[in-house]
Structures are given as structure tokens and as C-alpha cells.
Length: 133
Image (cartoon, rainbow, N blue to C red; front, side, top):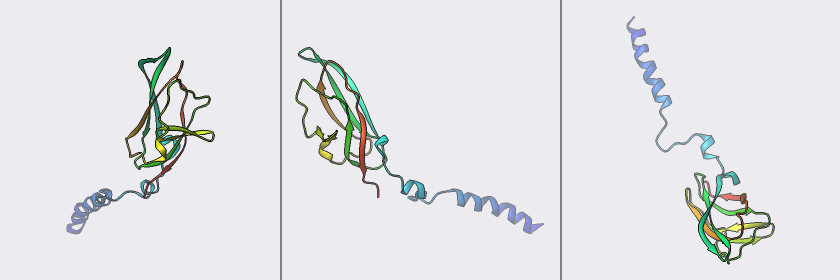
């Protein structure tokens, strides 16, 4: 009877220890998680400003991954702008557009640029390299 009582007390305590993660430890799946193009969101907003007759749009390319990313490329068929876009922020390279000179974008951070045209262009993340360790 006394031994079964000890087991009833010890068993929940042992289970609790197994369920509580060690501080700083991550499950294997989290350690091996990589950032994909889907980890980059592209948000556009009409600023309300005009460049001639064209509305000005502000684009925010945001890293939603838990790791820093670099070498972010966007795809935007037919992209054009009636105002100059800073090439350090957004420039054509081959078929796609390189964001932020290819530099690191920290988690939850964004690279922003503006362009002007008669309509907003669809932009989607095409490629990204992660700096997950």
C-alpha cells in the first residue's frame, strides 16, 4: 500500500518533468526549420500621393521567418515605374527583382521602397536564402 502510494505521487511528477522543456532547447523540427519564399510577405499600399498622373505605391517586403533571410528575390511580371526606384532597394536581376541589395533582413523587419504607375503590380516572393543556424 505504501509503495503504491509513492508511485501515485512520483508518477505525475516524472511525467511533468518530461513535459517541461529545458530552457533554450528546441525540438528537432524547429532547429531544422528553413525559411522558404513563403516566409516573405509583400505588402503594398497606395500612399495617396501622385507622381504626375500616376499613384505612388509603397511596398514593404517583410521577413516573417524566425531567422534572418538574405538574397530575397521578387517576381513581378511587367513591372515599371514612372519614378526612379533606388536600385539598392529593388532592382531587376535576370527574370526577377533583388530586394535590399541581397542583404540580410532580420525577423519581423522589412525593406521598403516606392514606385509610381497607373496601377499596382502583383509582386510575389520568388526565392530566399535563410541564415538559420
